[in-house]
Length: 577
Ligand SMILES: Cc1cc2nc3c(=O)[nH]c(=O)nc-3n(C[C@H](O)[C@H](O)[C@H](O)COP(=O)(O)O)c2cc1C
Image (cartoon, rainbow, N blue to C red; front, side, top):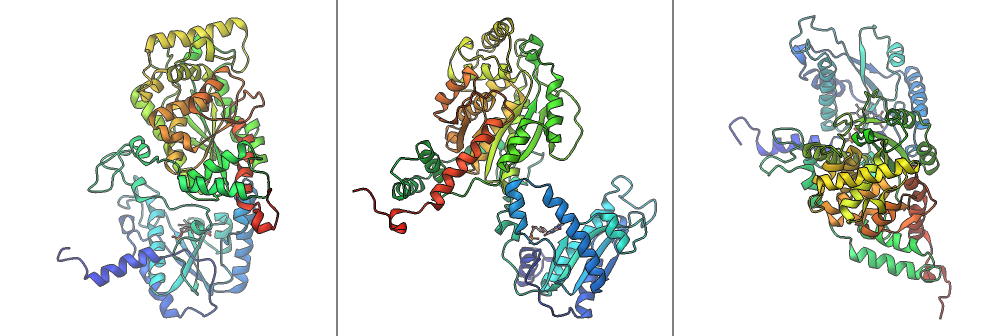
């Protein structure tokens, strides 16, 4: 408190309006908004800060029904295009959402931006032209808050082709549409965003967004800053034994012979323990994250595939042409591709998360594959991707990977963490002849001899052998475990990354389901070490996330059974004597 701060009650009102402002799309009342109220909220918008005091906004107030009907038709088209782009479980959830109230509200306001206003020398805009649009957004924020204080609901609609809408509004060519807002009195303001209540997304904790001094050192003011890795390790807890007991008890009361769902019973018990409730939520929507990177050990001729194939397959994933895309479409899961270390410049297209640490690792037979800092940075990428996917509403994460030569790095990791020999765990990957296989085993052995890995130093082991996708996958699994979200592991690459994750935080296996058992010999050893039983065993050896995707409906079925199957007492079925 100082001499300039507002009295307590007024300060409380400011924070209250910020807290209680909502995007509103339903429950509008037909009463008109009096002109003086409308003028007050627009005047509040006009008070917004702007770059170089350029005040780039204009406000177009629309009440005409015919015009609103034409605009609604534009929004309906954009909505349909968006709906068509969604994976299965998302599309179903989206169908239930209301995204606009163009006709239900008595008045619509369009906020525009003139990026040329204020002239060529507008202070601050010369180096950041986008600050013009930011300024108009601040006008929207003022309007939204003032409207809330007036008891007016506001819904922001952005389902438009911007130029189509501009044409309908008669905007001069140099003006951009920033916001289309629907205003009206409402029956209530929901306490939380509708998208949160509907499970479409979750509010990100404040601590995820606050960094001390430099990006990555998370910490609220007055608290000690922590690294992402320390943060998630501290957050990983044991399974909830009460929820597990409840699941076991329910499984025994379900209208089926006890134990007759075999492994699935164990899956549903574990998922209940992870979620901390019985029954646990359905593992949907689900997303598979394909972490892609290249490997310096490729130079040792451990595979006949050229290194360019990594980038080419990434392009294939993004174009929807790979097996993982077909399986994801079948399972209704979203596909995300993360470039953590591909040795090529990749175009930034939707679906690709550009998070390159370096263009490929170094050859681990000659030195460490990556520096410790790089390994930690890749782990952080994985944690962030897991957090983002969970915050975006996903209730199950699946691991995917792409990296020519990554079974070689995986074999080295498996040896380092399980103590097995190179000859025992090294496999033929994509399919290699005897000579290449012998060379591959030798490469793994030489790497182990050179680095003398210490499994008690998992970051050091990851740095020694790589790849970037392994480190990122370890972070991805840790990030999911910290959020008590199930992860379905794909094969050998994911398994070796899970060994690193488990070495960093033993509790991590509580969130892991082994999607399948790969044909790679090291995978069985990996699953043994992790104490995981594979859900399927079909001799797959493709990677990409394909085995995890095939297992998703099995995990979902296990949960659905626990949620929906009647009990002997509820169904009036006689239990065995
Ligand atoms: C730039 C922007 C565009 C938006 N576009 C839409 C939209 O087209 N349809 C919709 O339903 N909500 C839209 N919203 C509203 C957000 O979904 C909403 O603000 C968010 O879920 C948080 O909820 P809250 O505003 O109630 O806190 C938009 C919000 C912003 C800031």
